[in-house]
Length: 300
Image 1 (cartoon, helix red, strand yellow):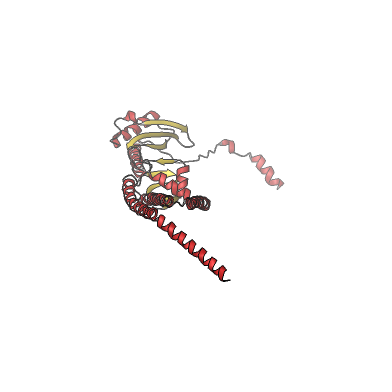
Image 2 (cartoon, one colour):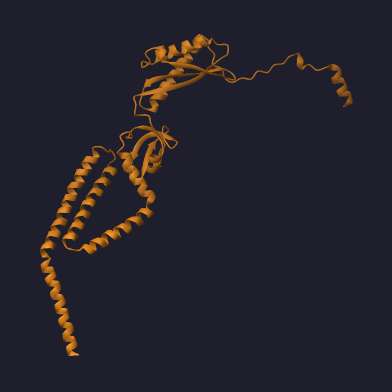
């Protein structure tokens, strides 16, 4: 019994001595690994500030810039951790960490597929120069001013002051019309005049009124005018012209002004803008034969 205890004690001592020897031998590597981790921490802080400054100069959304800067800092720290483990000759632990990170990343990606897709879409949208805060856009059946783009959603404010929240991935996957990219817009105006009107005079007067109302229209020849159909109560036409505008509000104001001035000119010239009417015609063909009427009453 005593020999067994003595052997076990000797083995324990040998094990402890081996550990102490290993620690002593790896002290330089340990110190170097600690220095690497410390350096990676400070490099990560500097990288975060630098990336934040660079991204903020291109992306107006602070939330997007912050998340990109944090991801950059995390990448630097993880790289320092892997380097420190390599210095400590812990390659097996490094392999296990990489395998575990891969499995965990796959699980998280599957569980948060929708959230991650919106996050990456938000980052992509933020770097698009053709989509900026304050732009008036139309997408996914909604039209309004872009007031926010974050990691989850694309926020519009419609003309009636309602807020529309759209997932980022829907913005990235669907067409988007941006009215603020150009400084000129085309106004479309549809109307109808009575059948008794002089169509040549209507065309001339309409183009003249538009040219005199808007400074951007230099001459009446710049106004396009087309008769489109013989309507039920009127002969309809389409008139279109260009204005200097960057928002739908300016376009609506221009269309309103054009309608007012055209109505004034038509009233002064005696040109009728008819509303839908129905004409009932009564003539002798509708008269009844007296003899037929008497027979019908007598039979009854």
